[in-house]
Amino acid sequence: MFKSVLPQLFATTLLVSLSHLAHATPIDDLQQFNSTTSSASGSFTQKVIGKSGSAKKVSSGTFIFARPGKFRWTYTAPYEQVLVSDGKTLSIFDKDLNQVTKRSLGSAIGSSPAAILFGGKDLSANFTLSDGGSADGRAWVTAVPKSKSGNFTKVNIGMRNGLPDAMELYDTLGQVTVLNFSGISKNSGAPASTFNFVAPAGAIQGK
Image 1 (cartoon, rainbow, N blue to C red):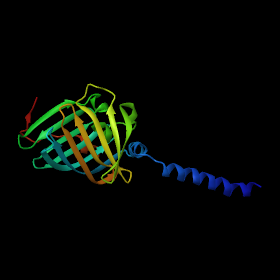
Image 2: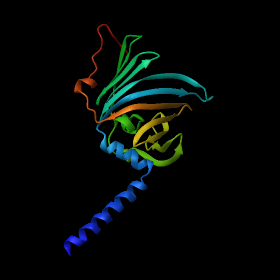
Image 3: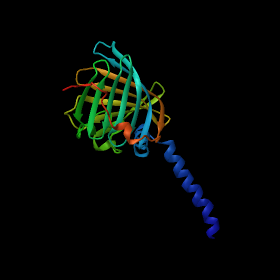
Image 4: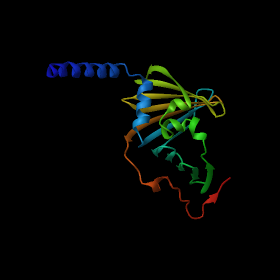
């Protein structure tokens, strides 16, 4: 009797699991990425589009992060700039100016677009999430900050194969910053020193 029940129980459990996977939404994929990813690295391209619809600035580089709030975001082209956060302080180094600016990270990251990649694991605490439909081979999630004090009105996140493949950041000035990601490696880890910024000798302290 007990043996005969096991195959039926297994089959039922499998069907429930497959049904859940079949109906997974982009929001499920994004939340799953956040809840299972403690660190990640990859490359990005960034394009800022003005109100007129023309690209104002195009750049590219690499990133690495460790939750919560630690990251190194490096622009390599067309100019070199590094943004490093140890979870408490954000250091910005402009190589051309040889200048370092430091800011308190504080709680601002919670409702900022950076939180989607670098912040805590529960996005719904700071964002209202909705299904953004499908386009460009991606399933999109729209994230609207619950706090109205930031510089961004909404962020669209494009998911592909369970990973954030693109982001569209809409700011209060009517500009859109478009990010495309590639080569994302999940939970690859990073030495703690990765997120400790050491200013080059002779660097100017900015305000």
